[in-house]
Image (cartoon, rainbow, N blue to C red; front, side):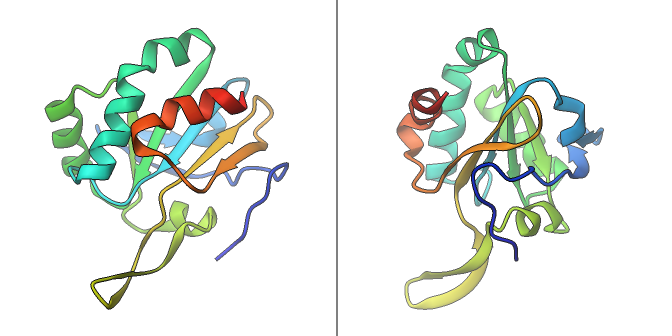
Length: 152
């Protein structure tokens, strides 16, 4: 597991989006990218966060910012999540956990006294050169966009 810091080169990745298309971070060189990691499609906090980005998506696009969501859910799960909530941005299926591990967000978690491995909700803001400009560790699911905009 790597620990990334502000100023580091963002790890490149290649995976599949919700439609099965190959997507890599390199495709977004020259643009600011909000790369947000979330635990699971269709769960309350993840839905709140995704809908906040959805509701503010046009404003982010107007500022030249791309939004990419990443979870370990598969393409089919992402398709259902996008359809149910009318999400206008790309969701990346990280079923082999390569991206969450590269970004250091795959970690041991605890719920009701049980320990398990899962994704820590984290947002990376990546600049036009592919460097990590900011890392948001304490994501406010109801105001995720506001947190991003406060840093840009």
